[in-house]
Image (cartoon, rainbow, N blue to C red):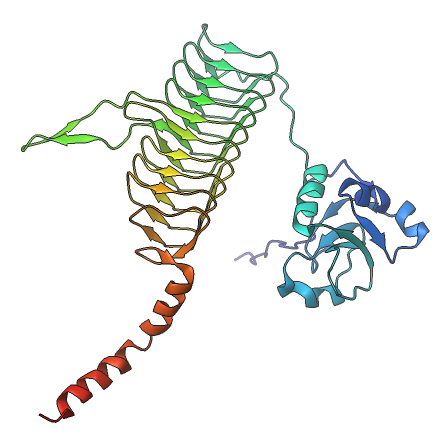
Length: 361
């Protein structure tokens, strides 16, 4: 029997060639940062090829400290320089780039080293594109994709393999549809929208009327509208409106495996983690943050800036700016007290019973 050869899982192995490099000076300039503890020769001669974690960064890579849990990793990092906040009181052995927000600076540099791929107008022979569809000249269409009648797609957009785009869909500029994303008829996508693989936009809402003997399906005739800079995660489903539209606001980011029901409206820049479920006709404000597996009942309003801990269950309206947890959702501080009491319930119940049994008549 041939010996089993273990694969090389080295985290320092490059994923692909990186054409972009930066000097330390240019890297600091790109993130509006300030260099510290760097000699002139280092800043001019050292060419940075990427960014990595503190433990895995090489001498030609940058790293960053955005979470205090990793402070001890500063002592052993081999990074050419580390992104630190301007007020961080830590001693680093290597060059430091002081920035307002290390994580945001990391994101900017990561986008420099891994730039988006530009559309080039490449269309696979197996793609099916209806003659009435209007595609900008540089739109890419992958293998097996289907683009139906009267579809309009703006410049710079890329359609991945196996995507299905229904009749009269409108897609803006610089969008990216990963493989097997589906957009049902008449839905509208703004500019710079990203759909991850398996996302379904415009599936029928869950609407039925009970006759006493069967569930009568109600035709779902509204649309889904995704405004600019929206990203929809893998296998997330957004139902079309029953009559009006389901609307996902500017800059909203939805994680994988989320369900958005018919006629929901989500305000700008709200973010939701995996497996959130929003019931029909609920309105979510702008700038909200929902933890994973949060569930929202239908026909309620959640105000702007609300934060919900994971697995929260929302059964009624929530005022703007609040922080909530639990099921049913309650103010976070109250939930902390309730959670602390929960572990003490057995002894409290035992004390109550003993007190009741021994209480004199």
